[in-house]
Amino acid sequence: MQAISYDAYGVVPSLVEIDDPVCPDDGVLIEVRATGVCRSDWHAWQGHDPVTLPQIPGHEFAGVVAAIGPNVKTCAIGDRVTAPFVCGCGRCSWCVSGEAQICPQQLQPGFTMPGSFAELVAIPAADFNIVHLPDALDFVAAASLGCRFATAFRAVTVHGRVQPDEWVAVYGCGGVGLSAVMVASALGARVIAVDRSAAALRLAHEFGAEVILEAGDDTTPTVLEITDGGASVSLDAVGSTATAVASIASLRPRGRHVQVGLLLGEDAAPALPMGQVIARELEIYGSHGMAARDYPNMLTLVASGALQPARLVGDVIGLEGAPAALVALSAPGHGQGVTVIRMPPVRRI
Ligand SMILES: [Zn+2]
Ligand SMILES: [Zn+2]
Image (cartoon, rainbow, N blue to C red):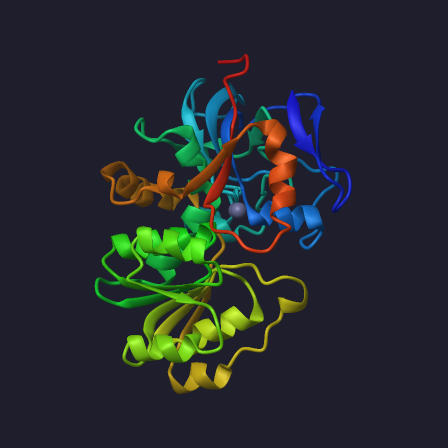
């Protein structure tokens, strides 16, 4: 099959012809029809988050079941499917209780096993991890659900517990931040979106943000003023010490901070204002994707039109364009939405 692969960190990946993956006994092979280009792929390729080498990037995808292991009961050849970027083992106590996003034996395509920038991707424990797609959801839109949108959905609904008319601050309006803006707005919250990019802020406004703020020194005081004492929920969708601290400082008493952006390198252990956390009784959560169990709630809102992940999609490219799309993430700034690789039906279905 054709795949995008890199042998060493930072070396531009190339389109290669390699053997098809082997279908796991409890898993499926999915013929990839669309797969998103995510900043996590870029971090892995840059070596910020060590992965198995060589590696095929890609962890947010949608496609068609092309092969089924003998132990799989819930999938058929030709099913239109996706899977969370954290694939649970399906057997441990966390998985059994529905919390596969923190499974200790988790596997992640593009990081700990070959990813979806390829004609085929193997997904283990298919009965547990595979999510069937509604007919109305096309592959390109579905690909944007697997990582950023699902992570934002869980951050806003489960950790943030956002209620109508509550103020929600979103720091960073890349793919996951814009997803959070859309989800919180759909739930009736009043959203303040913060970013350095005017283009990203325009998109945030289109997706429902009531207030857009250019990031700067006076951002937090402005948020406190607009919200008359602080937001009920604030998300750091960037992943930096500065934005994590600003997010916490934007909260009213009993507010909820959700750390969505990955904190890596010199930001891996940020000094957070724990004095404020105590004095205001703030809640702090990390968000690490969303298990397959929780997809139906999100897909119901997508099917009803309340959530429109297709609006997050920016450039749609071919597999051969993936290396350049990863390289483009090295440049600062964003605001063009989510880049998705679309792949034609190849040969199997
Ligand atoms: Zn991702
Ligand atoms: Zn597990």
